[in-house]
Length: 233
Image (spheres, rainbow, N blue to C red):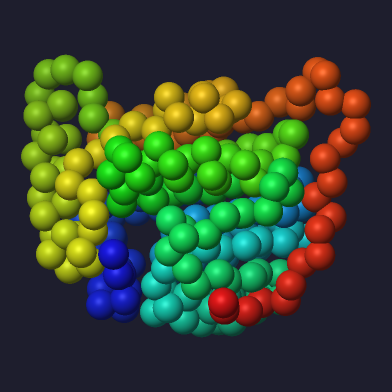
């Protein structure tokens, strides 16, 4: 899977095919991270969400795991053009399947239009691995495509998804060929659905998943681990 080839046109493709709907999904619950101190973003793409997060939360530290060097370059440029502090962001240029987070350090996790890139078997390993980085109180912002349960809207979504996967498999060597709902895996990983909003009659959804502090916990989980300046690994 490599998005380098389409990275320069990714935002244009998104706008042409979905207007501003995808970005609206990304930003729908961003206010939940207003007080977050340390946030993990997986597959940020061209930085559209990250820039708005840095504007909203002026003290947050963010780690971005992104496999595409070109996406990282575009995101860095977007941050610079927005006059935001790039030192608050650490870029990790790795395939998330070959990476593990620090344990229990994030009070915010963001996976926007990210899980649709993986097979069901990959998600079974990936979701718990990501969840291991969540602190005792963590907000997980998740948005993606979805499939309505019945009717013409379900048929419409299926057709759109088939076209979408065909395009990305041809241009990025995407491993997935179908959409898989990670909700059960999030629940098994200790998260509960706090809020959900559907858009375009069920074609997309914007979720907030929340992890409450465990009652038996007697000490707060520290999120003050050393934070490296903005680098690309």
